[in-house]
Amino acid sequence: MYEGPLGTRNRTGDDRVALTFDDGPSPKWTPKVLDMLRAQGVKATFCVIGAYAEAYPELVADIAREGHTLCNHSWFHEFDLGKWSSEEIRANLQRTNDAIVKAAPGAAVAYFRHPGGQWTDRAIAVAADLGMESLHWTVDPSDWNSKKTQKQIREHVLGRSGPGAIVLLHDGASNQAEMYGALASIFAEFSRRGYVYSAL
Image (cartoon, rainbow, N blue to C red; front, top):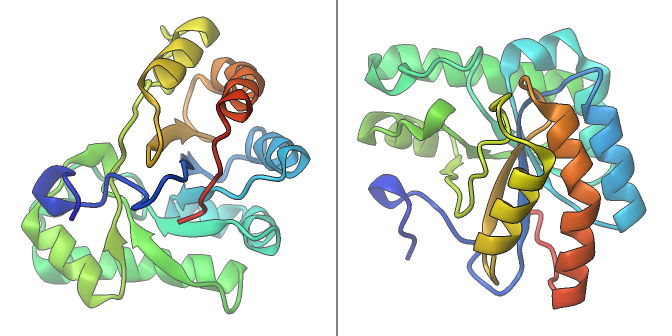
């Protein structure tokens, strides 16, 4: 059904558009993103890093309380996670899930997103065994890159998004001022196009 790497999910499955935010939670940027999403009436998906979920549990609780979807993004953004043994991958993902659920009791962690999109069949299989669907993306403006400007991020997202798109953004990384600056105009154009949002 999906055409992401190794069959990972790279579309919403209908005409709705999904915004996903990776590498948080960040005490500086996650609250700002949550505020903007609330103002827009939009639910999104947050792919959180376990170590940060443990460090900032109140932010994970806020994400869940506001009705957003939680996604496992590994314990500490290990790019090579998929090359580890199944047991090591499982331990990493379970540790991350445990931190998320401790911060937001009762929250479901329905998705796993491999750091850097460096998918392997092994990582996908372990995630599935833990009850998580592997979530890729359709649109990637590389908003984490400090060389990317607000204008470049906005134009990339608007130029490549369409019905069913999953948009990859970051509420934690190193270039969030530019990403955040682009968000309002992205919302405005998506609204003009009549897009409806999915929290996946």
